[in-house]
Length: 152
Image 1 (cartoon, rainbow, N blue to C red):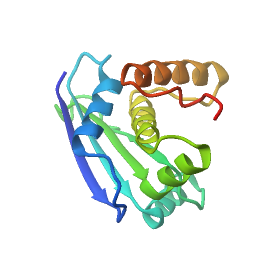
Image 2: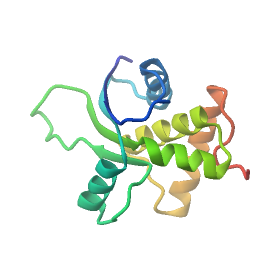
Image 3: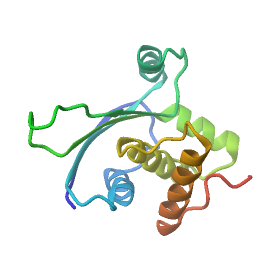
Image 4: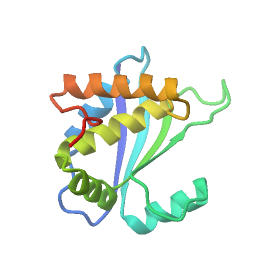
């Protein structure tokens, strides 16, 4: 599987993961796909994250990750576009600190979580949440990261 990742850094944060980190995490989350994948990953600050969350979800605060699945009618474009992920760097850092998590591990979790959403995974129902969380745990363990849902 070939991955084309358009990484957009629109954040003033200084301790961001590298392009290689983001690619490795996306590859892990997309490994089950048989086809190539293209996605945009935009790293933002709180103002942009808050505005996007308000515009698309009606919630007036910045959240950690937003996923926007590509909605391309069949046959219109011949590209393997999955969609866009938007991750708010200050929220990621704050959550890692508040939850006592390693910052790099939290970044990995949120990138994988977002990539799974782009593939149709969800956590609205309990059984969906359990399946998604189990896959996240498995993928993160393969990458050497701890269980993100364990008590800290």
